Length: 383
Image (cartoon, rainbow, N blue to C red; front, side, top):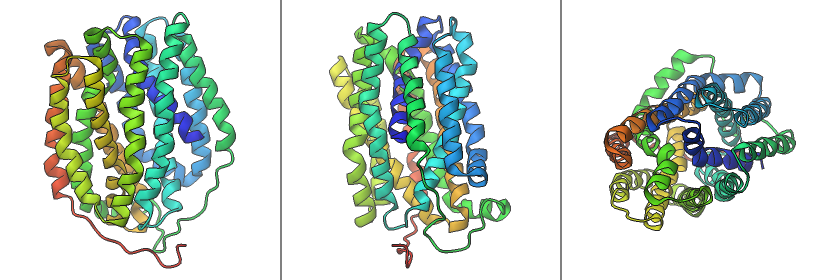
């Protein structure tokens, strides 16, 4: 439930934030700057968040993250000017940055190389579930109730309720055998991470592309197709939530059972920039939603596959650091992307952001082709 509620809030936030900031007087470039600043905070916290989670406990960090997110969302509802939202957006991003490494490491601790991609896919189903109903509920609340208070109160209350299942989480040591050096021996572990540098570069470049357009899609829908907030929510629900729900388990199965991790990753990466170019040609709301559904479906296929490739490539003692560094590369891309997308919107309109997205998604192709896959056997006695 904790994962579902977090996904619900992240997708409500994503689908409404640019419209919310626009209603407070922010321009597209200023919205991009706001997302950039919050991304800088989140990116800087990714590696420390992994260290903190290992030192103080993943469950404790997840609960702390939930509380901080709830506080930030409650304060959003009180904002009267877009400048007041800047520190709140930074707090919200920082609290989410604490959540992700702790959640992922819990999964790693309970899995082995032979089932990890499948389990990550199942975990992402919970994420997809929140992503399906969340944007619709958020858009409906924003349409029905005057102002923006109700969507933010709904998100904050949901987080408070999710503290109950979060308090029931169990922690234990990784089921994999091998040296458990932890994150303490940083020098040794950073050297180990050299083998995944192409994968890290891939995430930076692809997520610059994703970040260049994703925060601005609600504004694009409103300005080009004159839709209401509920329709924006439906767009995100189907174009993101349904897409990830349908593709996660098949992707994990093909990656784990058939050994197609690298092939899936390459296929997805090659196709995404083509679809971004097709988005610029979409003449109506439905056509754009269908194309965007496939963009997000392919993007979601890279999540379990890239994670499995990364964790197969590093020894047990470096997995926590590898997860944190991967998340840092993702956050770095999604931090730079909105800045570029906002300025390209100012220069060339909404379609300019789609072109930027296509360029950087295409630039990520060589990096993923260069990443080698390490095949690991199931650990004995891992159950």
